[in-house]
Image 1: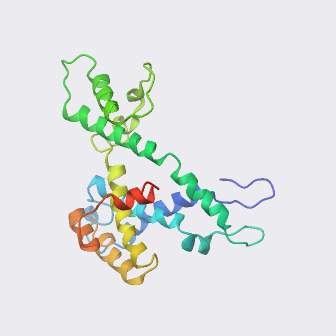
Image 2: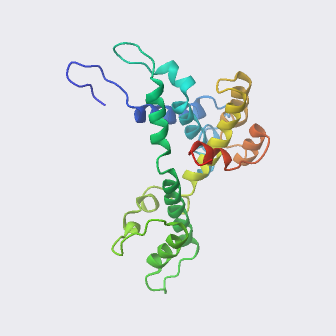
Length: 231
C-alpha cells in the first residue's frame, strides 16, 4: 500500500502473509538442485502440490515467536502486544468451519461437472451444484443464486478439475509445519530436511514420496483442523 501523507509505507498483516507466501515459491525455485529447467523448482511439480511450500511459509505469519522478530510499532519499536496477537488468532479462526465447507463445495462441484457431465441432461450444472450443496451447505442459499456463472477459477484460472488443490496443499503444508511445531519452528535439522526432501527436488520425484521422506508417513488432516481452530 502507498504511504499516507507524510507517513511511512507500512505492511498490513495480509501483506506480510502474501510476502511470505510468494517467498515460499521463490525458495522452491532458488533452492532447487535440479539442472533441467522443465523440472526445476516449481516446474514439473503436479498442480496439487505447487502451493505446498508457499502455504507452508504462511504459518510463520501466525507464530508469536517469528512475529516478534519482524513485527514492532513503527514509531516506538514496541513489540506486538499479546492481546492484539490473540485478537488476530481469533479473527483467523472466525467461521473457519463455514469457510472450509465452502472450499469443499467448490471442489466437489468442480469434480462432478467434469467427471459426470451429460450434455443431454437439462440443467445439468445447476442439478450438480444442488446435489453438492445438500452435502456441504449449512446456511441455505436463495433460489436466484447462480455462483457457478462466475466460478472463474475453472473457466480462466487454470483450476478446471483441480480446484481441490487449494485445500489439499493446505493439508500438506499444515502437516509438514506440524513437524516444525514438534521440533521447534526454527529447528535447523528439520529445516534442512524440508529443504532436502521438498525444496531441492523440483518436479523430479512424486510429491507424495517427497512428503513421506520428510514427514515419515502420509499426510493427515489433523494439523489442518488444529490450525483452523477446529481441534
